[in-house]
Length: 123
Ligand SMILES: [Zn+2]
Image (cartoon, rainbow, N blue to C red; front, side, top):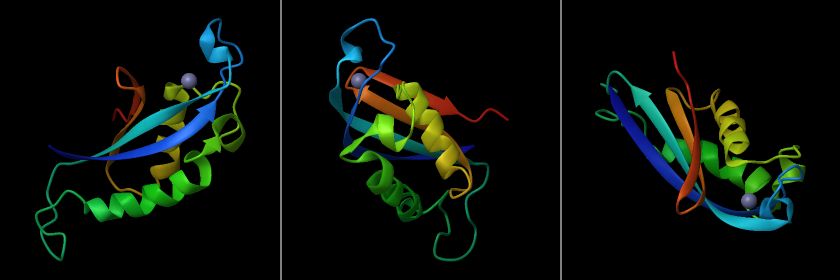
């Protein structure tokens, strides 16, 4: 099994209304997003021969989504939830990208350098 992963960054604000700690205050993160694609076989013909997927193809799907919903946005409003946790964001992004990226396997959202959440497709 082959896996490729592309990393993106975005800045966004949110508040976790139900949290019993500091996350109940409005604040922001410099998020890191990782999008992983898995395939059993490499592409055997055409300009992407020898690849799982062209990294540019991943970017073409992710960048417009980041612009519309994530980068410099208030996540409670744009993805419509009271609890835009890293877990919620990972699942939301996975569902959004799934129809666009063949072989999408895992979406990881890092809120800080030491805290991340992933949503993975288990067959
Ligand atoms: Zn936060």
